[in-house]
Amino acid sequence: MFGFSKTSERAQEFDEGVYTRYKFASKFAKGKTTLDVGCGIGTGSKYLLKHGAKKVLGIDYSEQALQEAMAGAHKGLEFKKDDVLHLSKLGLTFDVVVAFEIIEHLPLGTFESFVASLKKVTKKGGYCLISTPNKNITSPDREKPYNPYHTKEFTPEELTVICKKVFKNVELYGIYCTNDNYAASVSQLKNSLWYQFILFVGSSRFVRATISIVPKSWRGAVTGEKTLPELSENDYAISKRYIKKSINLVAVCKN
Image (cartoon, rainbow, N blue to C red; front, top):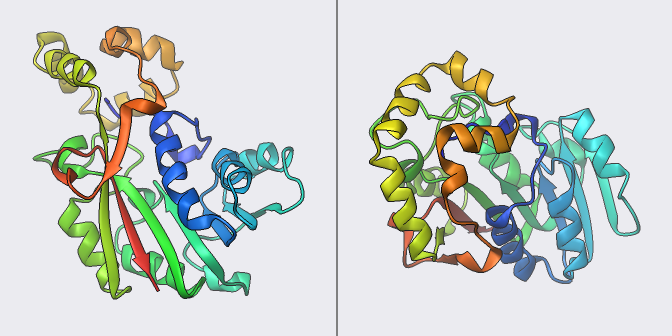
């Protein structure tokens, strides 16, 4: 919730929110060749193959993450180091391309070229799925994201505009929490004086980067997140109807 996760390392934890994205993507990837852009340690790539994808290639720039991913590589699953802004160098096209939680990490001014790069490796009639945090929820009323590893976060309108500059057919979905008890607890925590103090201290990029290396369980105790109810995969849903309250956005682009 406070954005202290060092996601730039792409050492992806397969938590409930990530599970929801890949579960959604697996419906498109069944029986299809699939590219997982920014695959991290490969958990999502493996999920897609296990749930019906014909073949999956995962790419990332982190050698450390790829080493772990390759330890679990097997038939139909491959991993490779590559530049997400120049995907056409792969010399391959795919039925389905997924790029989850990548665009917000890229340098300013490269967002449209990134989407264009995704299109080049998406077959005609294929699908490209792009997910990113919903700025209206994660960093409202501020230009710089709270997460120090994000260069920019997007509103639903901004993400749609960028995708439609490249793809003609774009549908926007939102991932949201269906657990009312959790939502009420988050609201209570956000309204507390302690949360306001943490928010003030965390406004420093240096402080946030420092805190990000602290173990997750310790961070949760400091921020108060440890007191929140535990969530399961059943506490998340994805829909076109609840974009405004969605934590993450998913653009489904048809080539």
